[in-house]
Length: 399
Image 1 (cartoon, helix red, strand yellow):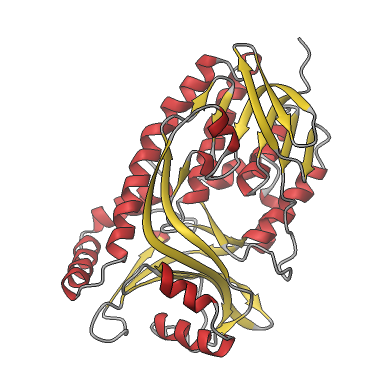
Image 2: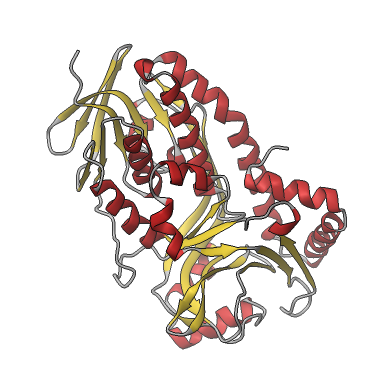
């Protein structure tokens, strides 16, 4: 039987491009398609201004894929994660607790990168791999599978015959829907704004979450910009309030953002456009179908708390790659895909539920609920073994 490729990847976001690099570097013939060409210029209006913290375990996969050396010069280390509760009568900090990676490891928790920069470096890596064919502007439309193969229709009228389809095509995954795999969705009535700011007080490689109501205000360190300390911000809040902020002029928005940050870094100055998106949790009921594996947001969507989203996605890829390497001759068969589902499903469900609870706590608006949240933060931090266990669980380290 003749195949057009070993693996067809539907989706060219960060997870899909990383999958293409990882499986390509492992020697598999890969075609990766995405209907929307990636934006790789941070100054472009449509650039993804969110940032991603790649946690410790992700580094092994990125090294395997030949990506880490390319990314390392742009990395902002995450040594300390600071949680601030500002849920009192006024929006100033009343509880501050710092979780230091040195308590559990010689390395930082992870390294932070702007999403547009990750896309740029991923594309450069794919251009070095002769067995990877990336087709931006092309999307998947149909999926037909049988025991021995998958045939995927593309929007240019062509059809690809492959051994394995990897669905990395987002929360509304066309491949998941074509396979008839259901997903459970939870909505919170929240939206998030993502943007970059400069500020006069250095972040000192500390990632800071400020909790009051509506959702966290998170500042993640980036390299300096124009000689000023710089951070990527995700500001989660109720949908209507967030929508209204998205339309404020820069001066009014900066004033609101500075207040919501508890003024921890001094006046915040916008250094990018603002991007708006809805907050949901979502979990696919199965992670595989016939000749199909779901990864990343096709499999799971979480609120952006604790840097779990993309890191869970990279664990999906590492698990799938390990299974493929162990038995390349049976790539995409039923036993391999069942093993993938069993290896990932329980961990994904646990993390989706955990982040759901954290997000609901972050939305607390009543003084009583805010006080309970502050008391819980104090209690957890006061127990060193519990604190270390939570940090290890967050990184995906099992000890």
